[in-house]
Each structure stands twice: as structure tokens, then as C-alpha cells.
Length: 172
Image (cartoon, rainbow, N blue to C red; front, side):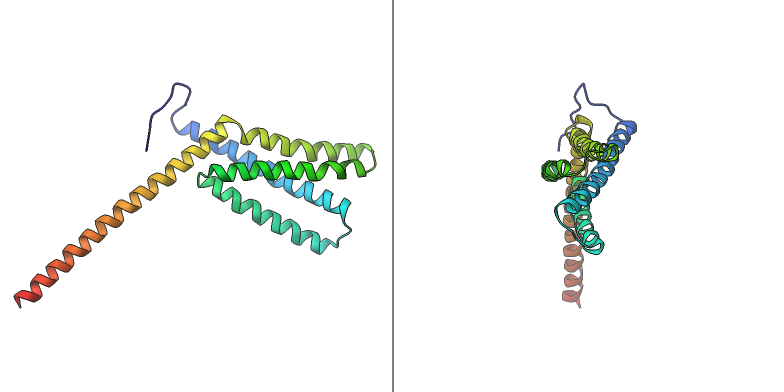
């Protein structure tokens, strides 16, 4: 556990708030990206009923929330998974973008559908976002260390209580 602070790292409540705001902004953009890209792409590739489309979007949302929860717990692997998921969604969306008619509304939707995941990837790779994930990782590690120390203390107290009970029984 290292609490060394570099010259470029800001300290205090506002640095954590800035990281939290960036994290929430990235989460919102990724949620909207997943919903928009999947709904438009699946609509272009397949002719599915709205119920099936809703089920697919629900599973995708649950997947995103599980991975994003791992980010909150400080997992850098989950950050990579989110980044690669966004790359796959962009790759999945590009052909369907050209299948649509080129009207003003379609161009605007395509622009939004591509801008949100690209902006999300840019935010995920930012130093503020990664510093937030590192702080979360350190907080989880500190919590695990405290929990382990508390378990040791509780085990010692139980053992000493059992020893006292055993000595009382041997006296009687």
C-alpha cells in the first residue's frame, strides 16, 4: 500500500469529485452508446420483434452494469473490457450505418451513434478516469486489509475467551 503523491496528482475532496463526475459521465455515455448502437444495428441487420429487441437490450445493459461495477471496485481489467466492448460496438455499427438512407436525420443519428462511444473511449483513457479507478482499487485493497486485520483480532479474542472458559472449567 503506497500513498506516495506525485507532483501532478491533486489531493483532496475535489480531485475525487472530479474523478467521480468523469466516471459518471463516461458511464452515461456508454449506456446511451450501447442502447443506440444495438437498437439501430439490430434493427438494420435483423427484423426482430420489439419484445426480443428489448430483451437483447436488457441483457446488454446488465452486462454493462456488471462490468461497470467492477470498474467501481477498481478493476483495470474491467476498464479494458469496456473499451474493447465499445470498439466492437463501433465495428458492429459501421456497416449498418451505410445500409441506411442518407437523409439529414439518418446522418445526425449516425453522428451521435459514433460520437458517444468514441467520446466514451477517450474518457476511459483519460488520466482522471484512470486515477479514479486507481483510487477505487486502493480503497478496496485498504478495506480488504482492514477486514483481514479485524478477522485476526476477532479470532484472537475468541481464542482468549475459549482459553478463559477452559481455565474456569478446569478450576471447577
